Image 1 (cartoon, rainbow over the protein chains, first blue to last red):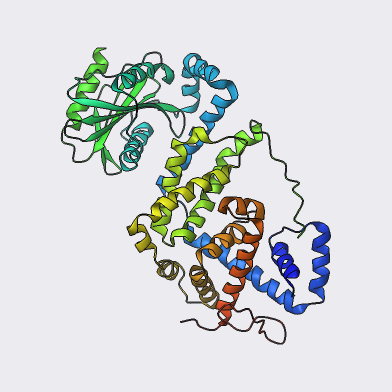
Image 2 (cartoon, one colour):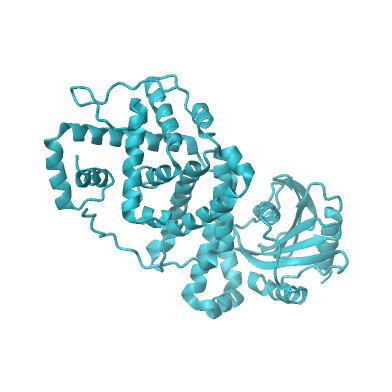
Length: 258
Length: 199
């Protein structure tokens, strides 16, 4: 079999021949059983490989699924920004954010003993930020503070209060609007004096009469979440962080006082 | 070679079709990435790590994605960059060495004739040179067009076709026991000779 016929054989298998060339090659196959047998081998080989890789890959683990969902949210948001332009998108977020948040965020009408979705997302965000060094920002502390003060408007809730913390307790190292599996949230990453990293996730929720401070473990991390009106807060840190609950309590008190 | 006419029409980036299909496209692409990652690192845990790091970087760099561009190619570009940086980490390279074979054996119990063939094919695939594995995975397993696969791999079309041909023939030869020479030794009826056990 010459080089051209060999190229055609592979192109035939891979659906790369146009109709005319395909018919010509099929005529060639009909008169060349050895080539037809080789074609059969390659097709069989392909089926086995597809079957084998489908079995080996299996279903994606939850973390991969979750990251895929977050990427989807991020790309969708970028589409909105590109479609309407940054300014229009900002206006959309400022003016219509409440409606957007209400539409795209899973609502939880009543308090539940199950870990809420927003708390699970905070755990994942914290794990990602720490393991992939995404927590650090090039922005100056003053810029971060300004960004942190401006971010609540993006969430769409009527009023979003952020905790005012003693400067010597925590250092803000990242403040950003983040895509969630559905909707958006505000992510703040802090560094404690002892170097421990903390992630605070703030999301808009339907108001729920829940004034408690809930401490749970999720994904090997320690989480404390609470609600204040239409806003839910989750503080995530490592399981060994002994003062996470204390810091969360200070934050919750600060938010409720403001 | 006359390649197939490109009659597939790229939907408008902002069309409803695109909006509604983005999620399913993304799921399909992640499945493809996971399979491809396995051909690169030959270890399921490292493959999963590679895909997850790719997704994290894609999330962080979503602003750089242009909707009119090919989403799959963009994701593969990120995956390749992550893989290249991973290769600099010795522990990944060490763990990856020939570890697909135990993986195959643990997943595919060779207790039936078709299972034996499956396990042996996957092992033979794992022994192919990486450039041939990549080409076969993208085109033969995942069904990408030559043009898209060549773009993802950053190689000319002719190089891709050559790798495909060599990979297929090497795999066939390995399974037939002639070391990939492709000497055409077959039974009289044209069907492949029975497979022999490869030690």
